[in-house]
Image 1 (spheres, rainbow, N blue to C red):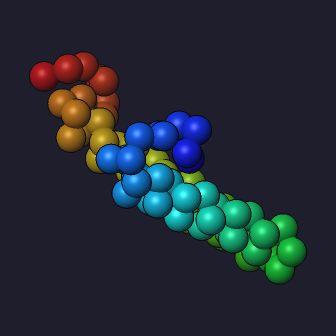
Image 2 (image 1 turned 60 degrees about the vertical axis):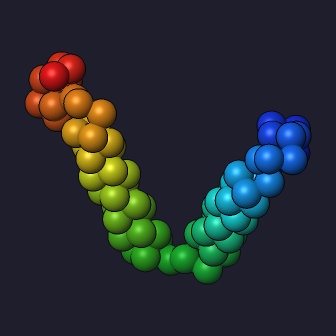
Length: 72
C-alpha cells in the first residue's frame, strides 16, 4: 500500500486497504483448507449474489438503471 499511496496524508487509506487484503487472505485460506465441497458451493453462491446486489446498488447510486444501463 505504501507504493500506491506514499504521501503521509493517505495513512488511513493504507490502513483500510491493508485490512481488506488481510480479510481476503483469511477467506482464501479458510476456503482452501477447511471447506467441504458443499459448504464451498454455498459460500460461493452467497458471495456471488452479494456482489450482484452490490453491483446493482452501485449502478442505481450512480444514476444508471439496472435494466437498460442508461444514464438519467
